[in-house]
Every structure is written in structure tokens, then in C-alpha cells.
Image 1: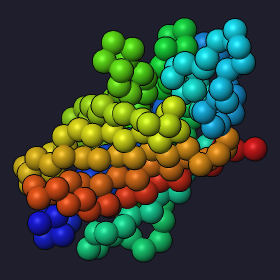
Image 2: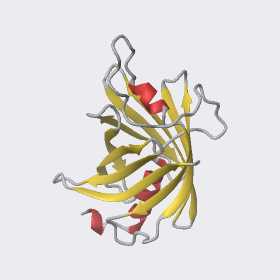
Image 3: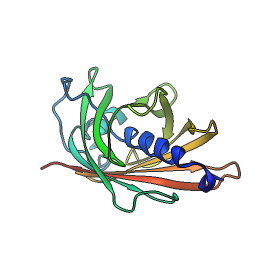
Length: 203
């Protein structure tokens, strides 16, 4: 059971979630001008080109504050942690890239993430790295609402060697806010959420 796992797993999983949430190298140049993230594009007018998944992702470019709330875990901090994130569009608009700077349980954490949409597999994809681990977290996801809500899944390893399925739901709230909720999926299929990160665009 997840709730019986050691505190080291809680810290490792929490740091992984922090790295998992949004992306762009602070020093990297963007291929497109940062813009507001927003709702899926309205139905295209006759003859107009429909918005692609890559164009929808590109709207998320910008600088954000992050509020990190730990939930559903014994020993999790009651008070949320905070941090910042910068998201940029890279490689001619094909992907977005994020760099996060947070303080989690009193420790500084830096994370990087890449988001994209694979037109061959028709799936959303992401890759995450962070300073608390040597592992690379790879996730694939699907959306039924044009990218406004994406459900990602992948595999993650705990500090005591237990391999588990990870579910990450990224939900666009409005043009300037999105939320990432992280859960571990047990062998019986029950999900245990452990982390929720809220991004708000800096004004």
C-alpha cells in the first residue's frame, strides 16, 4: 500500500512531481512569441485553418508562479510549497520546454520538462528531469477536449525499489492558469493522489 511506504519515497515522489509540471530553459530563446494559454480554439470559420495541438501548447508559453500542495500522504507538508516556472516554444513550434525553480521541504529543486504532440501516434508526450533523481520520466497521454485536459500515464520507481504506474492530469483552467494533479495507481487500479501544482501566469 502506498500509505505504508517510507518517507523517502514521499520526498522522492514529491520532487518528481515538482519536476513534472511545466517547461523551458531560462536561457533558451523561443521560436515563437510567448502568448496566453487558453481554451481550445472555437470551430474554424469556413476555409480557415484549424488550430493544431502544437499551436494550443504554444499558447502556454510565459512565466508562472507555482503553488505545490501535497495531498493524500502521511508526513506530507500541510503548508504548500512555492516556486516559479518559465515555458518556451522550441524547435520551430513543435514542442514547449519548461524550467522550474522550487523549494520543497526546505530544499531547492530544479526541474525541466518537454511537452509535445506526436502526430504519428496521435498522443501527447512529455519527458521530465529534475535534480532529485538520475531517472528520466517519460509519459504519454490523450485528450478528448482538444488539449485542454490531458491524461498522462507512465511508470515511476520509488526509493525502496517499488515500480508503480503514475497518472498525471494536466487541466487548463483559463488563459492564465493550469493545474497538474499527480496520482499513483495501485495494483488494484485505485488511484492515490499525492501532489497538485497550480500554475498562474505572472502579470
